[in-house]
Length: 625
Image 1 (cartoon, helix red, strand yellow):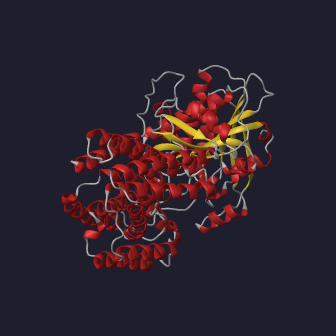
Image 2 (tube, helix red, strand yellow):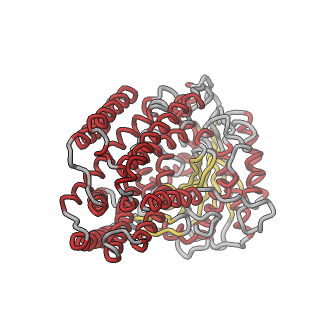
Image 3 (cartoon, helix red, strand yellow):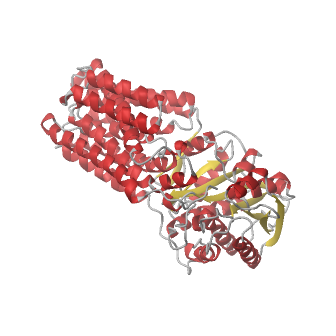
């Protein structure tokens, strides 16, 4: 019976996650004038992305002329800003065998005056240059075309008080040179109070708002109100903002952000095989992605243009979207209150389970150890499976290798996800039912292979030591459903406490899901401490479906962002799903099929990673931007 609850909840959660991760349907060219239409925007994408147009090329000049004409036709007051290339940009051109002699960058600027020129203006920004080997239909012809379509729709909605500045930068692919020139001293620079930047690192998928100005509480509040009006809703969370802030790379948005300007940065990162390659053509572009990024940009820009006051820098907000429908957020300090409620719910569940179901603290401790075994074993195995698809990007010796690895990313994700599933099934099936020496030996072999293929990695070594130790010592697995469940919830809440202390903007994944599991445990313990009746199992299943679907959606985005080098991120998110599903674990008589399924999932996951090297072989067709 429980096996049906388990796989039914898992399947439904996966189905919901897949549905919510789809890009929206593009609106046709005859959509209402006040709406964003990917059908209309694609006319510009096709014109701009006929061929690669890097700085200094003949097609670069053609695109300049086309864009200035289009900006003028939309009623924008156009101008240009020229400037020299930076030394780094010159080096990049010369490194690929070209000459930078006589080449200047040219920013294209358009102004739509507002009713009150005294008010701070709003800027829409994207870059129109490409790398030498890609037509750049996504990066960044989509951003440019989306801005032109957004301007048309804004004009159709009627005059706004604030001035709109359209900034199409040049030289982004070289060294962000155009953005540096504009924000370094253009006369319009100091009039701009908010900026929306559009980017792409792929050719499809939902567009995510992944970066804001510092002190973003007011920006997120406005984006949450405006973005939900967009086709397909919004995609954003404070974890993405926190992670991108810590990364060394940047985009055009980095320049105004460092000047203290508020705003947002959006991109889609699906279909990574199109990034900076010849495959990035208008025909291959996901028009739903154009619709999603463009409609979010339109609604946010329109809200800013008509706002009584632009967002000011205050404090950062902890926030996330729920299935794209709404953004929930709270001040960082509120995380402590939510943690307190979670510990209270867990305490109530433990009290009821001890009194009515014979739960012991020792067994809850063994449940927490199960979670540690899952984490450590999963980290080793996902790194092993990931490296079967090729080297880590940090060890890539050329741009060709890096972009080939990006093209293999969907295979890596499937392999890593199946590996996480395999470890979870082994836990559900009773990891101690397997020969301890065989399990420990398999983990050790996987760790050795991962270290040989990926180089010395302290995380892999540490995880392997923990996993092997926990596998060899007998009697460390939870012996009851309540022990396994409350131990996992307790472990998650401990991790949430650490995350809340060190990085509250990223802690919501642990805090929110830990609170959901604790509340579900308290309700289930009150209804049926034996966890055998449908009403208590239904409570668990609802939490598992909703929480699991939300986490799976986050996991997909996280893997596309960091999975090439940190596949273990999926294991941490998998632990959250495991926590919600743990009380639906099957009876002992059903353990053997789960263990067989675990081995099969691991083999298939490894096979997919190996297949990636065959399906997507190394090729020399790309150039780093």
